[in-house]
Amino acid sequence: MHHFSLRELLYLTLLFGFIFILVFISRYTRLHGENAIVAEVPAELLLYERTDLEGFADALEKVEVYFDRDHLIWAGNTLGWRSFRPGRYEINENRSFSDFLSIVARGMQDPARITILPGTDVARLSRSLGNQMRADSTDFHNIFTDSSSVALEFNLTGEELFARMLPNTYEVFWTSPAEGLIQRVLREFDRLVVQRYRFEFETNNLSLNEVLILASIVEWEARFSDEKPRISGLYLNRLNRNMMLQADPTVAYALGERRRLFFEDYRFEHPYNTYLIQGLPPGPITNPDLASILSVLNPEEHDYLYMVATPEGTHHFSRTFQEHREASEVWRRWIREQQRIRDERERANADSGNQ
Image (tube, rainbow, N blue to C red; front, side, top):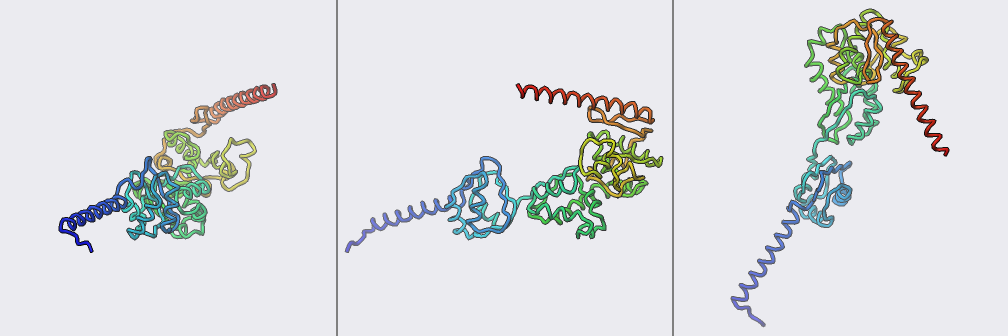
């Protein structure tokens, strides 16, 4: 039986110690090294449901990052991170397994930036929010009904609730329920609009809902924000003179489509057609932005009663009906010329296709 000398024992001890250190460094590096998950471009991991290690690895493989699947599963088992919470997680730089696994396992998600655009409708906004959050578009669509819990809580109709969806970008958690986001937007509407402009609302002849109705029409009508106070002033001049509002956007809303209107469209019977009803329509037709709301609270003072579109996308404003007729004829001639140009182009394309 071989007896190890003191020198041999010392050598073996050093060898085992060296091997242990190498293994420790290797394990530590794999667990805590910053290049375990490599993101060459910013990436976004979305987990819709709680998942295990295999499901987490599957989801991470669909994102534009680089990692070793076997090493990740080994790291998760070693560190005890085997269940991962739903959420939105950003990977903007290289990460270690220990860091990223613990973040997702504890559900420490990054907030999402949710954008609400102005001048939308319920269907389009619901689709947009459904695409930006985990909640389904149907969840949002159902909120904008008279009988939804949010509408009833704030004593609003579905249309009045929708008109308060102030266009902005909001930071919320991606997993937030639809009701949570809508309530957040309502709080922002109260803070940024109602509270900030309390004096303007209190001294205005229109109620808050009436301001939003008119602002929603201005939002649809105006292509450029600097025209909004003038358009608001025109509509208010009509209302103050007990004239028909005759706002084309209300006709388009009644028809359910955005397009050029024809003569017969103005006779379409609908409670929102302001060519047939007196005063404002019964509700808003879109969600106005802050500029549209402020244009109603602080309209331009003038004597204009009529307006017609121009080729530049703005409007020509007139004080008398005769001036309006002349401006309208200029607009119609331009429309006819554009139609003639399109017809000629289509004929030329057809002729070239037949050759």
